[in-house]
Length: 86
Image 1 (cartoon, rainbow, N blue to C red):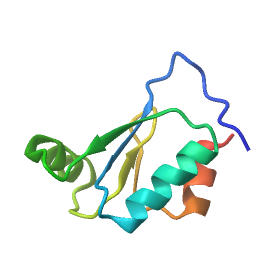
Image 2 (image 1 turned 90 degrees about the vertical axis):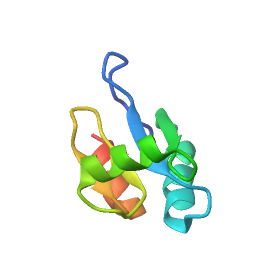
Image 3 (image 1 turned 30 degrees about the horizontal axis):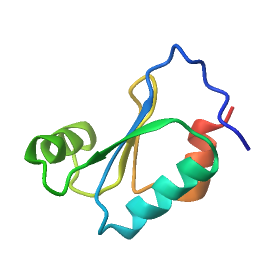
Image 4 (image 1 turned 120 degrees about the vertical axis):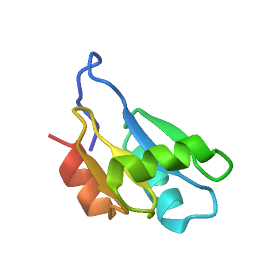
């Protein structure tokens, strides 16, 4: 399965931390499926952590922001696949 998004779309942004198992899994899924994304580590960045909470309204990570502004919080691999692949 390969990401077939348009290059003109804004990239997927994932807010996470290395100590977070769900973050590592989601990051691995995106990488394995050749999905371009920007990773934002919130562990030592208060502004990034605040932005993730502002987006999701929750403190859980990862927060995956999709092109167009929709977002997923703590998504499973199946939820990522459903949201990202056409």
